[in-house]
Structures are given as C-alpha cells and as structure tokens.
Length: 96
Image (cartoon, rainbow, N blue to C red; front, top):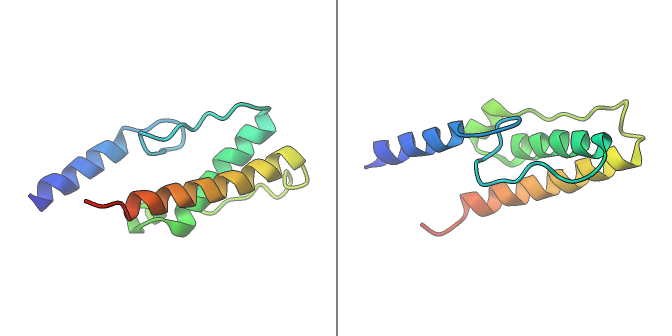
C-alpha cells in the first residue's frame, strides 16, 4: 500500500506546469513581468527552504539581486515566498 501511495505522489508531482509547481497550485498571478518573475523566484525559494527532501532536490533558493530594487519584483518575491511555504506546510500537515 505504501509503495502505491509513494508512486501516486511521484506521479502527481510529475504532472506539473511552469517551473514544476504542484498540480493544484495556480502559479500565474496577474501583473507585470517583474511581478511574475518575483512570484516565480519567491515560490521556488519557499519550497526549497521549507519543503521536504524531495522539494529540496527539485527547487533552490533564488533571488535575482539585480531586480530586488524593483518594488514589484521585491513585493512579489516576499508574498510568494510566504504563500508557497505556507502552502507546503498546509499540504504536509493535513490529516490523512
């Protein structure tokens, strides 16, 4: 049973889009390209920092330092970092 569950989780994780986000996560926020880039980078960093070992193999902490002065990129990075780490925490601690 555990093998089936593990294979199911791996298969669902493979059904992703964009930069390998979980299937049920909407990762196309409205806004300018700088905001979208900040969202993507912040979310990857949130998964890398607070994820399981599998997430840590898939994602890495990343900030585009040349864009951190852009208020749109900076705001999106911090918002998505928090959003994705909380999403991850909720997913990992849900009742089975």
